[in-house]
Image (cartoon, rainbow, N blue to C red; front, side):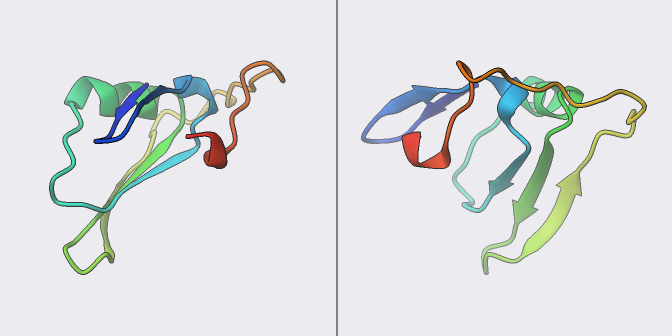
Length: 80
């Protein structure tokens, strides 16, 4: 997944993402990106202008296990 802000750009493997909270009305995320997150068992939460959650996307095909990342691909939030 490619993350871009005004000050930097980052990439993170989609397999290590467990949850994403979209908490800004100016965020743009494509439907293929949302599908990729959900296919990899990540949850996507959408918030209103007052920063309270209004909706959530979940994987409905939960019969498979979540992939685990090896030590070389694990990321901490502080590295983003």
